[in-house]
Image (tube, rainbow, N blue to C red; front, side, top):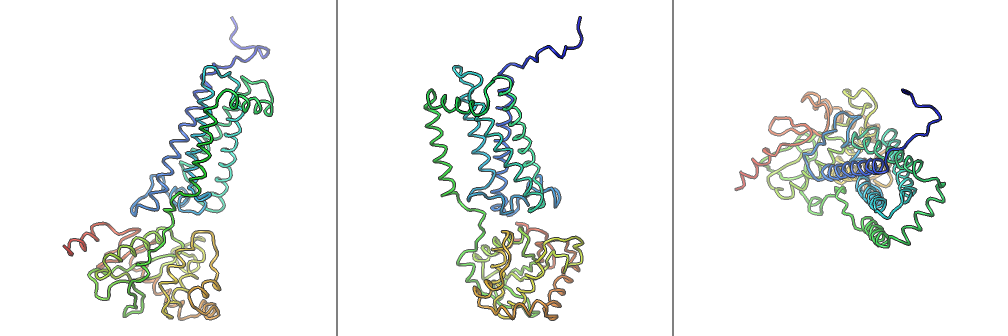
Length: 395
C-alpha cells in the first residue's frame, strides 16, 4: 500500500463542475457586495442619518470612501459598474454551462474579464491608500473575489484547455458568433444599457442648493456671526463646521433646504471649527489641511457681506480634489483677490477664528459638524425630535 503519491503520478483534476461552481459562487458574492456598496453609496448622500456598519475608524471607513470623488467613474458610481461587470461575467458563465459547450470554451474571455477586474482592484486600492487614505472593508472583500476569480478561471484553462491564450480567445469568439446568437443580442443590450447609464444616471451625489435656498434672508448676529433664516425665529441653530468635512456639507444642504420650508421659524448661525492641525489644538496630526485658510477667507467675506456665497462655494468645490483658486473665487463672487491674500495674515481675522475654535472646545466639541440648540450640543446630526417640536408647534 502506498501512502504517498509519486512525483511522476499525474495530478488528477477535480471534475469540471466543481471549478465551474466555484467561479459562479465567487461572481455571485461579488455581485452581492456590489449591490450593498451601491445602496450604501446612495444612502450616504440621501439619508441624513445613515452610517454604514463598516464606518469604524478614520482609516477603516466605507462612508469616507463613498464620499470621495473617486467613487464616481464616468458619471456612474463605481459599485454600480461592479454590478454590471459581475452580471457580464455571469452571462458568460451561462454559456459555459450549456451542455453542447465544450469545457475549454468561454474561459479565455472569462479569464481576461477577471484580470481586468483584478487590475481595477489594484488601481482602487492604490487610490484608497494614497488619495482617500481610508479603506472600505466590503471593497477589500471584492478585491479578494476578483483575484480568486482570476486564479480559478486561469486554473480551468490550465486543466481543460491546451491552447495558448490568443488561440483560445479566437476560439471563444468564433463559438459565440457561430453558435450562440442570443448571447450577441444580450451583449448588445448590455452595451446599450452601459451607454445609457453614463448618459442618464441620476447624479444624486451632487448636493447642490436650490434657487430658493439662495434667496433666504441673511444677516449678522449681535456678536458678529453670520446667520441665514428668520430674524425672530422659534429655533436658533448654531453650527460649528469645517469646509473639508463631507458630513458638514451634507448637513448644510439638508438644513438649508429645511429652512426654505420654515424660513420664518428657524435661524442658522454659522461658526468655524476647522479640523486643521495648523489651527485647531485638538488635531495632533495633519488632517483637513487648508480648512483653516478657507475659514479665514469666509470670515473676510462675512465682513464684506459675502459670507453665504463663499460658504456655498467652498462646500461645492471642497472634497472634489480641486484646489481653491482665489482669483476664480474673487471673480465669481465679487471680492478683491489682493484683499483676500492680505486677510489671510490679518491678526484680527485669525483672532475671530480662534474665538470660534475656543468656544467650540469649551462646548466639548471633538469633531464636525456639531450643533448647539437651546443650550444642548448635538454631534454629527440633529435628532428628528428637535425638528418635530417645530412641526408640532405649527399645527
